[in-house]
Image 1: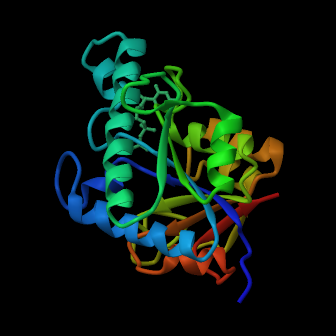
Image 2 (image 1 turned 180 degrees about the horizontal axis):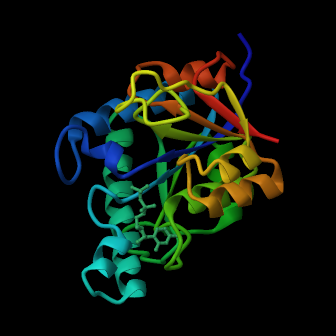
Length: 237
Ligand code: UDP
């Protein structure tokens, strides 16, 4: 079997790291995800990772309680660094060489984001976790994921979710929900499908970077995806 995607940018929501907990990082989930990443790294795939922070803190939540939005967003970005360090720890424990690069420099705990250096790490087979989103308030880690994917020239953005792909309505609430196999960026934007924020979709569209939305909870799914097996929903032109 041949690899279809040699370099991927995997976007993981913070909530995915919570597992069944109501807050924070579930180490069981962390270890599971690390194992899934290890499988594809061993298959020869270069992996970039962007992790959100919904399990710890989201800027909009702070702002809705009266906090200054930019300050709250800065806190959200710092929370992504915590998730990134936790994921690095889980990956390195199972022997996956990993570097964390933060868009907000904090050199005593991780590298600053330097694009060319990140690409070099990837070429050497190291997994690179891009922390602190874009480094700017008013953005999300979805947009950060697409941005980094474009910068490192990843073949695809894999957006890991709790369901098998993009549906016409919420499959958790509606048994009759229909899954799309393929969608265009335009479909997502005009139908208001909640896949990724509009800024991220627009950015991917501009560079024609495909997005694969798939379920990460199913063991072996990322590996299937990189070998071109039909998992999830592909969003492209
Ligand atoms: N954030 C930000 N700029 C970025 C990325 C993230 O300000 O470029 C902040 C924002 O407050 C956001 C939080 O970090 O709510 C966590 O990211 P996100 O909500 O995307 O996490 P996810 O929903 O993927 O868990």
